[in-house]
Image (tube, rainbow, N blue to C red; front, side, top):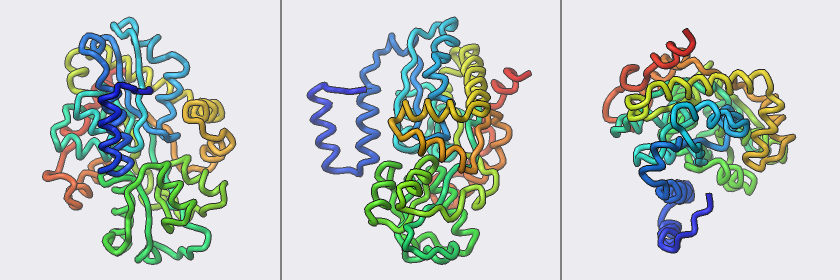
Amino acid sequence: MLYTDPLHLRLVIMVRKEVPAVLVAAAVVILALGCIGGDEKNTTLRIGYQPSTHQVAEMVAMENGWWLEDLQPFGIEEVKDFEFPSGPPEMQAMLAGELDIAYVGASPPISAIAQGLDAKILAAAQKNGSNLVMRPEVEYTGPQSLVGLKISTFPPGSIQDTVFNKWLQDNDVNPEEIDVKSMGPGDAVTAISAGRVDGVFLPHPAPAIIELEGNGVSVVASGEMWPNHACCCLVVSGELMRDNPELVEQIIRTHIKATEYVTENPDVAAEVYSRKTGQDLDMVTYSIQTWDGAWISDPNIMVPSVLEFAAVDFELGYTDSLLTAEDLFDTTFYDKVIS
């Protein structure tokens, strides 16, 4: 969405001078979201997502018109989706009441719910699917060889940040001995391509793009760091769950339909993703062919590793309390739909 109100543009310019690019992007999206009126909110479903193949089910449902077609019987007249660079700014938008549902890594909702976000994880979206990619000239021999290097990944509280930190600690590496740079996917790809960082830990398709452009080599997949770890999920606002549970059930049905479709038609999923993001189709196809991820929808599969994420976030000081499955999940909608 292009937002041209002069006051908002001045605010964006002021923000750009003071804060990192990832937060500027979040501010622009939140300002754009703010143009949605109260009456429209009742008939408009607002979806957050990120430019990653992890969340291509959302894109397929949008392109095929399934969101609107499936939700119209429940009073939805329009569906809008908004792109975020990573999970933390997406959850800030949801905290501000600007999103109804969000496709997001399972770690950012932990911090957001700890801050008071009225929402729950209702479905899984995907597992594994990130890679540590090092510059070709950097000799990687294991986690210890990263000490003293510059590594870019998503901001604190993201899936990538949580998995990366846990992996380092599991291998007796102090994360503080690594110069970790928090960036969105575009900035991180640019940084490793320009040699400003030694490596990146990013979700697909970024690792494939870096490799195909000759700017890095994937050295370890996230599924090797943490086997079958939960990654992306579907978060739904508590207000929507309470006020329109039948609508939420249909959201889950549509999500399951889209997830099954992309699993059975990965080449079509690649085409949809390429059109949605403008990324090269061959690179996206290569990413899907080589990643270690899988698209899933059952939230019950995610619970054990998400609780581990919560424990890691608590240990890292990202949350003030150790959240439970009841704090984070509501699997009743999914269980009812599949029954």
